[in-house]
Length: 574
Ligand code: ADP
Ligand code: MG
Image 1: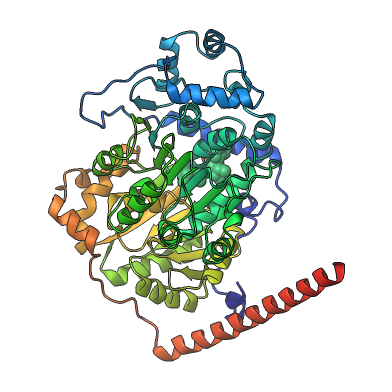
Image 2 (image 1 turned 90 degrees about the vertical axis):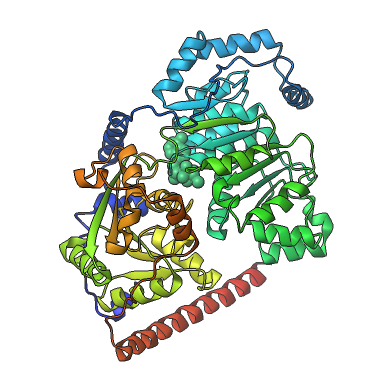
């Protein structure tokens, strides 16, 4: 924003016109009639429900869809019953539990019908019944602590999303779970709520729950979500960083204070290898963005993490919006009699996102397309994905030259810069953010209106996750994917996703050939080589870089001053 001002503006954005959006990203910014917002949300929900898809058999194998009757002989369940008794909140006999359940559903037909209405598909044995509403969790059968209900209310989580309806009872019953649900459909709460419930309260015995996520940014977001749902219950939560690992290495007793650990694989493996971390008490292990974590590159690290979690009663959950069948087969080897949930169509995009494929001719056509979009009036915030760090930097130079309020994020930026950019983007102070694959998964930006795939995604999964940064929690959003002649052969995969999620696709695209497995593997390994994004003279680039340096330095000085002021405040109050 500062840079934007310094460069003297450029593209204009109509704050009045977009006041609803500004309210979403920064509620204090505009005074909008509450009722109007609620009505809008209701409309969105109705639209979403209208857009139901045809049912598809994803697993193409024989499978059993079993209703919710549970076995009385479930040893894990008995274990947790015992724990509940010890906590003083046990509740009577199994028959009575069944009665409670029957209050929610009269019979198994009703359960099946409810699942069908909510597009919940389940695969596995003895699958617990879903819940209809959060209030069901307050019955003695589930006996959720009142503070959790309170936290749900305070966060505006009035009703469970379909993934939450089904996964909460499954995790509460300590069953292993593989869950595939669309982007922005509330998967985080779907695993956090039952885990927080089961942990009951802080215990100072060491880590009892572990959540692994592929990026630091996502891990931080999960950390905040745990804080929200567990507010009032002083759980000790550790987000593993170099610093937190080092302090726990120095004082092993410190490790015992924590209940929950969130980490990226690499950081955690490092800590395990340096004996800075004991995971033998972990009762719940979650892999968020599980398919990413089980890809080559992370797989070896995940292997070590699984090996370090030695508690025989561990409950494991895998969550993602995309779970390719290869990953599913692999995942089954580390799970015990898992239940699989699929919400909606498997490996499909969220239906509230309007998707478009745009032919831009050549590489140069992409910049023309972006500039046209800006001229027409871009509705911020906008997220733009490119295929490499190099290209992210190049595009940034182009757009900043156009006077757009733009930032760029990739793994070469410092942690402080990345944190700052994400905060600013969330707060609506950055309007256009250029990113590499770093931001494709998991990050929850409520207000993002448009995702532009400047460079064609390398996999279908990448496409689904990238565009899933918009259209979250039932909101609408748009996604435009640019393609050139070179991308043509890969188009059909995306066309299929679009069609499955209810988007209109031009007739000619439907008749295209699917790329071969070989071609897809090739593209997965390395992106298409593209002409550089470079229309600005090196003199102008240097000028921009110089101005940028000035701003960064002044920001840093300001932050340093604030830190010094804060320290002296703390000292004087001590
Ligand atoms: P996913 O992991 O499925 O992509 P998230 O867990 O990030 O989705 O949730 C997306 C958004 O939906 C978040 O902002 C979250 O706070 C919100 N959310 C989650 N559960 C509910 C609910 N039951 N009601 C309303 N909003 C919810
Ligand atoms: Mg998520």
